[in-house]
Image (cartoon, rainbow, N blue to C red; front, side, top):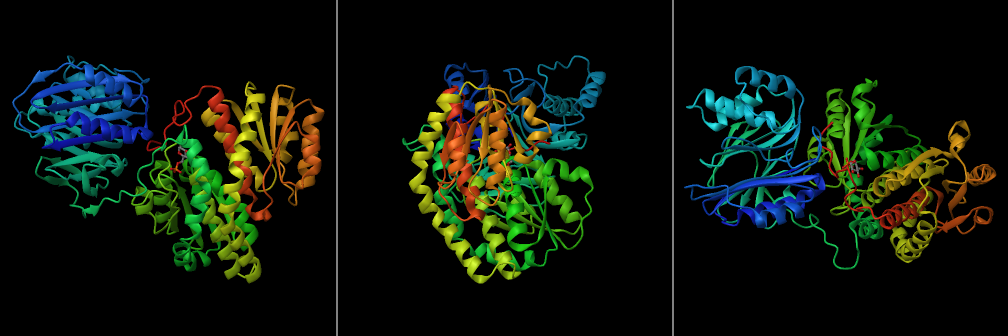
Length: 608
Ligand code: G6P
């Protein structure tokens, strides 16, 4: 959450470097943005509400703040996801105190105490924002004022000693050109610019085009930056890594109107990639085989994938599975033992709650295996072992192809575990594997049709304000993920329940203005799903059913139907999720929502 980019060096076009970096980091937050930079001896400071494109326009018209005599080029920039204080120009970063400017990602938990203490010492300090971050810049500035011989890096260090919470910060003195960065619980990478200079950013994607090598900072690091060198003032120097550009960027390529649609269409490809990289799963298998219990942890869509996997793994391998929301996991004090293995799911590899769950498991001596999309990310680094789900960069905030690729990894794992533990015969395992390998071909034939059908249904029911998604068995997890997609992108109130639960409360909501999406493929629970359709219809509810070609009774009794291809029951979730994703997408489009960047959300959640 919140994207940071900074530059110090020889490239005269600092505004361009910063704006370019910011637009690549916009997935981290997009409610406001700002920058301060020195370009050709002139200082520019601009902030604006909304997207980075608004900041770009403001920067074009922006006036020179002052002229200074510093030959170097440098600057810092930020794209915000509001925590403290509404999205506004005043709350946008960089925040300033005299010549010191600061950008921050994270939360200063004790900002109120720090602010009071500052005001007690100097009542003239003027706070101009509602943010927790602004206190940091005043703190640093007051440390410098109280002892003019102190360097900025010393002022930063002693200020950070007072902070409770998480941070990635870059601090800049626009006159002296001193730049310092530090992090604790929020990510920062340092890029070595191709021409002379250094970049600092929340994610390596912002370095592309400017640096081929980088370092990943660790918690507690404080680094002083100058055009020619970086000095670790706290923490130890880090290994310089090569920047892997492939898979880091994605473009719409003129074919799709939105990344969400593009990424839905990429789901065949991602399954293919996982199937062709089964070596990495085999490598980890011996460690997981010994497990008495698997604990799957994740947030949002990653958590929902875990729920699907719970059914699959228990059924195919007979290993008991617990699925936990990472944000609750660390407060549950769940008994854990050495026989447990934690499987940690995260697309971004950054979600702070998931990262904390990894740390807790490790403290308790539980082996952690990450299934992560972003290579070298914090969660990938923190886990004892990692399987990359290789979905490629997912741009849309609402996750689609990452879901499918994580599910492909977990399905393969479930099959392999089942075979090794003899709960599946070799023939059964081979059949499942070969059907999984065949999914991309099936998908490529079906996506256009499903998209069109869901578009038509979205047109018909798009004005409805209440949706209930229902499924039985493993489909209850798909109902949850479908409802999450609908909420995220169309802002329609969509709830999900295991179908059997409807009569224990949710049925009271059903009336002619309620749309129920019922996942009813012809699997072993088909007849149960049929009864639910009848119960909803009897109360006047509208039913859209998702079923397989042989689900004749469902087809006859529903108001709208989408047919997904028949595959083995265990692999049906790969099929039934597709209409849900398409429906959410088309609803959002018809309702004029910002599909790829839904209001209030961010793709990477680095605050608790
Ligand atoms: C955010 C994103 C979701 C994602 C969740 C977990 O809420 O908007 O799309 O599912 O975080 O993220 P992770 O990167 O850990 O899978």
